[in-house]
Image (cartoon, rainbow, N blue to C red; front, side, top):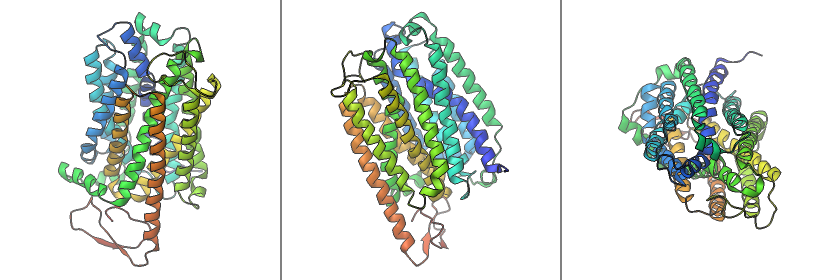
Length: 457
């Protein structure tokens, strides 16, 4: 079976993403325990819980840059926007060679600003390389390969922390060695991205003025459908921040799990990545079949799974686990490594379903304004991540669980509202007037209801 040019381009992009995020996700997974260890070692004036503050700054500036990302992507193309964003990640990882509190926080802010260009540029490049025939396959392939990076990073750290916990490595100066490996991964990813082929759509794309691209985002946010999606995007930001950082901190800080909880943390990285890959493959195999019953069925199933997991976490982990080392036990269930790892895998499985559907939704409903919609996605999820990481400096586990459960319920209702609106449009017999806000103001065209055009309607 011949692989299409579109799928080949997505695979080549995925190589860059796997290499890059093997470093980025591994770093984010251990950021709070690592910075807490640096604080304990008295290095660079770093304070306890600065890891949460650094993550808060990353996502705050990630949110701010969403206003600039559509313009940068339209000006540079998705490919070169990704390269620009990757350059800022080098600054973040370089800040740990001579750890200083203010240098790390400033570098985190710069990296957060640039990371949006990677995500929006990647989304734009994928949109340019999907069609109705390969949408589910290409988005799921990309997401599955992207999540291989978490497995690779976990395996690397599993052997690196085999004999010593993260506190000892931060104290004796061995931390710089794995950051050298991370920097090498980023450089290789940049070089590979530079040689990605440009699609015909990208070559013919007309650059828009900055204020026009920003105006496009606000126009989209005025539509009921985009508001519904923004509520769902908000939840995905909360849950991603939880499984990538807060839940791993709970594992690391729960002393009853093992004598070397750093090692258990690295196993958690691996099984979370496995859950993500399996979830992506699951969508790739049955995505088209599920579509017969409604694309929202996959999302609702993943949300229900997450709510069940939140209940299990609240009943099995000590309430102060997100804040500091604790010898406590869960209020109901006895916590074990097997239970903690099963929860990690299922959190990853559910999140993979949600994330692949975001790419699929944007490719299906908002292809003409994909850069603006990806920016709204990053903006909504970025606000959620900024808020939860700021609150994480003070929140006990029960507070996280209440927030996530309520947000999951609201996200499910928002998706149902979105599809109810889509269904109503399909039921209209008359042609609809489509206004693509990426075109000049006032340009309208008559178009039939199928394929469904939602932009600006």
